[in-house]
Figure (cartoon, rainbow, N blue to C red):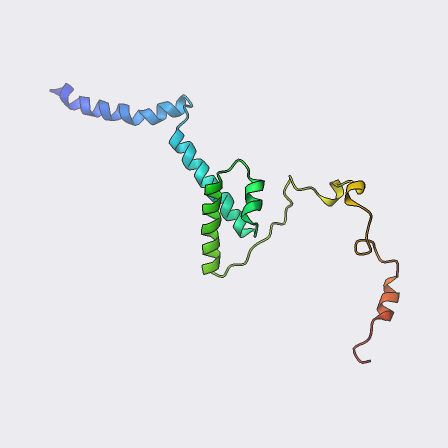
Length: 135
């Protein structure tokens, strides 16, 4: 009689321990892995849209993420930002894969142009050449 009452309880306890056993043995769970990859892709896509990046840039910067998940996150964030009239927030930190101007050799970058070269005229001479508001 006691065995009949304890059997369902023991069965229930043993089934609840399956997940703990798989976690202890570090067995991969394909469903959890897929859900994690999907959530990470959506987060990356939403962050790219919030930063004002295009989908192509987001795909290029996050090659390991699922493109469908990135697109879903990007689209959700786009809809949210459109509904609430939110502006984009550009990133203040350069991406580590993007080359900085200092890292580009001078032979590749080419000669300096007039736009990038500092002006040879002192600040006082430039101020003297500007027309004044009253004249």
